[in-house]
Length: 103
Image (cartoon, rainbow, N blue to C red):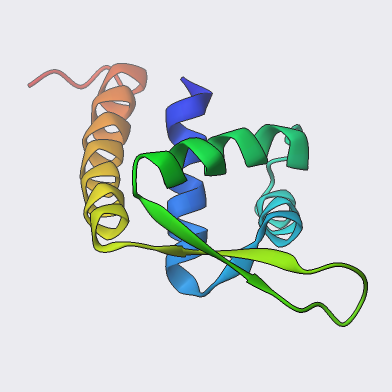
């Protein structure tokens, strides 16, 4: 379950601005995701790149080697929009269960 949620969160962060992998890990941690490392994020980014949800560009870094920056493609923007709708529906349904609210 967390895999799909993490994908949506990554797309959301990337939608704000171009971002590199380590920066994504830091942002996730800042939002409260403490159990994810760069080693978890990079395979997801690679898969999203293969699915044409994100693109990457190598850029110079002020400290060390070039960094790979990720940005959303139009397909990625659509995927994020769909994720937000599904997430909202799921959140409502789970809250209905927790609050014993039937339809």
